[in-house]
Every structure is written in structure tokens, then in C-alpha cells.
Length: 91
Image (cartoon, rainbow, N blue to C red; front, side, top):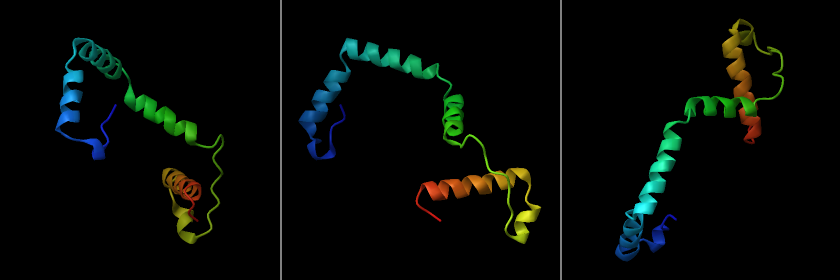
């Protein structure tokens, strides 16, 4: 387990290093490293992003003259920003 900063001292750090150098701990760390190495982190991040989107995005409803000339991708990101702002307590 991580050492809380208020408990960090030479003795606790020394014990943690000795623990990490044990063969079984090193072996398990290598197993975890191999699992992480084989993960597709980008695909997982994209999947997580898509899971947070609403099932159906609203159609654009420009309310300002400048919104009339937005490209579809810029409109999408504007809508996404509005959704994120509302979810975070914004306006």
C-alpha cells in the first residue's frame, strides 16, 4: 500500500523497498506489467468516452448568427461542451 505522506520516514520507506524486492512481489509486478503492456489503452479510453455520451445527440438548434455557419464537427464539440458544463454544475 502507498505510504501516506505523514507516515513517510526512513524506516517505512526502507520496509517498502525491501518488500518490493522480494522475488514473489517482483514476479507479480512483472505479470501486471505484461497485462498492462497488452492492453489497448486508446481503445479503452475511446470506449469510456462513448459510454458517457447520451444515446442520441440533440439536433443543432442555432440560437446565434455565428452558430449558423458552424461545421458539423464544431457544432458537435459545442454541444459536447454544453453537456459537460451542465454535468459539472455550469450553465
